[in-house]
Image 1 (cartoon, rainbow, N blue to C red):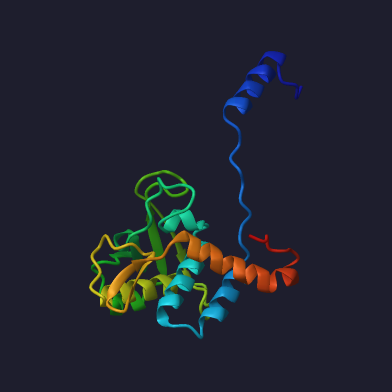
Image 2 (spheres, rainbow, N blue to C red):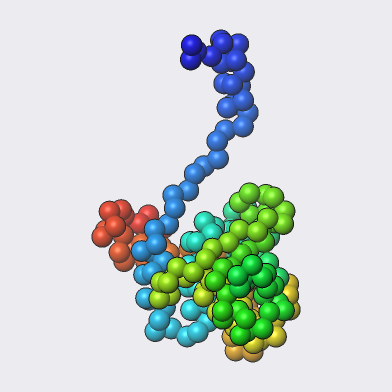
Length: 198
């Protein structure tokens, strides 16, 4: 009992050689995101949008290439305004048509996943309120949606874009990675690791 037939061992070994396990990335600690937020408080509102995106990514377990333009996997489609849905009780409110007053009373937010993470097109994944002063996925996405809608963004506008100085500009994954690396360099020793030098 518990032994695998030798013929299956050879077959499983061949599978591993043909399709190796993907390279795993370590999760980023919440303390790094909070440090990025603290560092950005003195900057202009455009930079705060970037910080809000990184915190949303923390809650949805996304890496920058999954929600921004750029990154190693160029096949991913970044989230758009129309991919955000707020919930007031059981009532689903699409971000593109919901009134700001209704969004303000939402207690749950969900993103429509297409090819990020699970690859199941149209799957809604969400989070409820956390009561954290600034690391709350519902409040963060409400702020991002509110800022985008106030700039008359179309439903297909990328969440990873910001309206500054009269024009839309995309937030690239390299900018977010650089911000996280800066924080890792600043506080990494207190968290028990050293940031890689690039």
